[in-house]
Image (cartoon, rainbow, N blue to C red; front, side, top):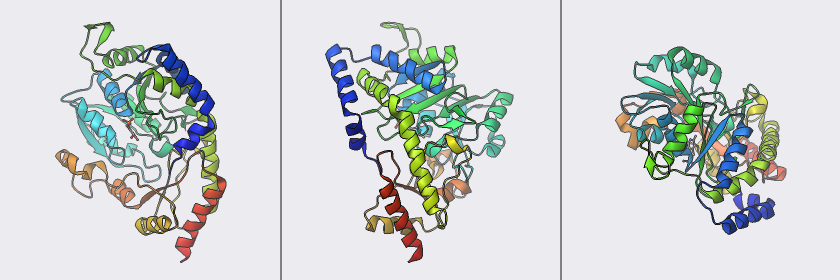
Length: 363
Ligand SMILES: Cc1ncc(COP(=O)(O)O)c(C=O)c1O
């Protein structure tokens, strides 16, 4: 499903040079590489500030904390997403309130928000899933009216556009993950918080390192969640290639759209046509499991993102949702399948995967 070694090989000399420079420099935590990456990544996102942190989960958690969200507060999030979203909400002491997804985009359905608002609601987390921007306009309008924070989860959407503008620059604050398999991935864990708000940016900077403004003096209670110099140096190199890699993902995706158009599969919607960066190429079909098994027999690996919605995960029984609470999230969990798509994949392999899918439906 991904070829990280192939990616490394394609830009090996640039990466090796960066790693050698950082090792020789002898500075490994919050030095020049992190500061430079933060400037470059903020510019890339069209935002004023980026703060490098330890992971995407931490980025969400620190963004929530910077907004002053904690015990007694409620935060709205989609039920079909990476579990990290509710992990981060609960880490702050706040309560996750889940809603169903829009079945076309697989992202938070704005129509569902009104029904779950309470006086304790403080924020909404739209997750830009699979590389597709959530429908932000109605979410931002409602948040503005109700005085709620919008915290964009951009972990799967580096470089994705909404109405022609980068995700991560629309809400109050945004969280990115640099987990190795992401469109922009480090060689370990990493994340960033992005915002146009100087107060929120400064709070995240304090929170990520013990609340220190001045070394060893905690002005607020913080934690340790820092992007390290090596990862920042690697990310600086990879950031230079992100647009070209995303363009390649889009080209391969349009190849799939052409080849699979006449099959029974539900293909990804492209509501913001050029803005989708295809972190995953997620298709849907009621016979998903049989299709997956058939492809496996042909040596084609696939993944299910995600097999169980958050509200039905054993660990989140405490949230009190029954089966059938969110029909679209549950249908998606039963039918969704991510088929191979990454920049190093050849058109020939896209042809092979597509032909195997066509054969499955013709047998
Ligand atoms: C949508 C989403 N949010 C948050 C995260 C958490 O990122 P990380 O794995 O870097 O903590 C991920 C990655 O798994 C993700 O896909």
